[in-house]
Length: 252
View 1 (tube, rainbow, N blue to C red):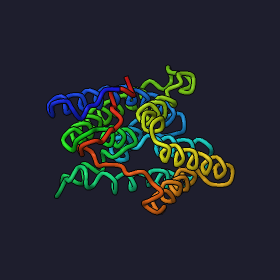
View 2 (view 1 turned 90 degrees about the horizontal axis):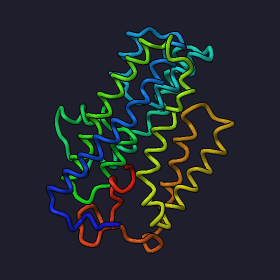
View 3 (view 1 turned 30 degrees about the horizontal axis):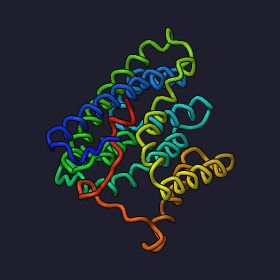
C-alpha cells in the first residue's frame, strides 16, 4: 500500500477529489430505487423530489418510504427517519475540527454530512485533502442522488421492483470498501466494528428502525473510554508517521 503522506499536496487533493466524485456517482445511482419505492409507497413525484433535496440522507428516506408502504403514519415514519439520520450528528462532531467551516457555510456542510462524505474525508492524509474529498463527495452524490431519485419517481411504473436491481447494497458496499483498510490494519478498529455489528444484530428484532444503528455507536464510545495506555496511538491526519487508509485504494 502506497504511503500517500509522501505525495505532493496537490496530488493528495486531486486524488481525494477524484475518489469523492467517483464514489458520489456510484452511490448516487441508488436514488433510482428510492424514487421508485417512494412513489410505490404513495408519495407523489413532487414530494419525492423535495424529500431528496431537503432531507438528503438515503437510509432515512428509505426508512420513511418503507414505513408508509407498510401502512404506518407519516409521523411514525418521520420519527424513524429522524432517528436513523441522527447518526450524522456523530459524524459532524468528528468532522468539525477537520473541516473548520464557519458561518452560513456550516449549514451547507451539515447537509453534506453522510456516510460516504465522512468516510472519504477521514481517509485523507491532510486537512486540505480531507476538505477536497468532502466537497467532491457531497457535490457529486447530492446531484446524482437527486437526479436519480427524480428519474426513479417519474419512471416508477416502468422500473418494476427496485429490489430487483440490487441498488440498495451499493451504499453499504462502498462504505465498507472505504473502511476495509482500517479494519485490516487496526486491532482496535476491528474490535469496535465487531462489537457494533453484534449490538446492531441483537437489537434489530426488538427495536424500531434506526435504533440499532444508534445503539451500535456505543461500541465506539466504549473504545474511546478505555485508558489511553490500552489503545494504540493514532496520529492525526497529516502528522509524520500517520498511515491513513487511502480512499483510492479502497473504493475503485
